[in-house]
Length: 270
Image (cartoon, rainbow, N blue to C red):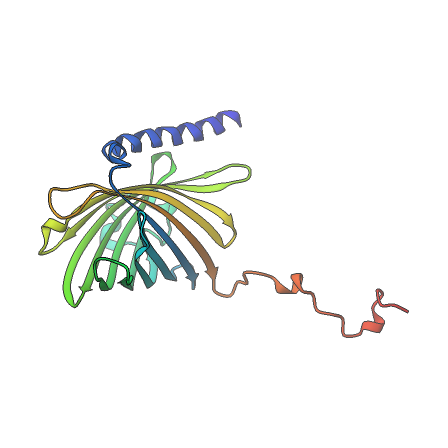
């Protein structure tokens, strides 16, 4: 038991060392960059084993200022097998994700700037994603996300491609269950290469209750010679999970119904 406990925490330590080296430049710039806070709420509603809906509410708070913008979104997720022609090239590890190797997402997101913001932003975005997932050595879950945003920004149309590589690993203690998560993401703006940018993120998602998770993370955007500036953002995200046909709370147990035949009850006064 002690060796198993030591091995799990040793793997976590190695992963942290690797990611620390990966983001050395970002850490060196921390404190001199633009500081932001990204609060968000996500609500998942699972229809069945293959599909679910997601509603999001998010905001951006700049350092020493009020909120710069806020956004809402609604998405549909579908999990499925890869195409038959691709199954020949997949490793046996994908058997551990039966029917969920491919994760497809489509949705709509609206972002609007606050009245106090310096820049006027009115962004309508249609989101399309194709994500492929597989288990890696040391029980890591790897995801390759391919996201395309079809944006209408202040009535101007723009397309951007956002490839992201995600590494996740679950850890469990006697009283705590959490998921360590990190990713690297590049933004490709078609027709406007000066706006391209690169981000890395480190964080953890903690299981608070059966239907509630709390995610905290640190996100760094690297500075380029052109338009994008270096940004350090601290994010916090409440995630609610609901399942169709499953009650979140058993109200009958909290507020039991009174016995209609009160006089027949053994507890009834004589």
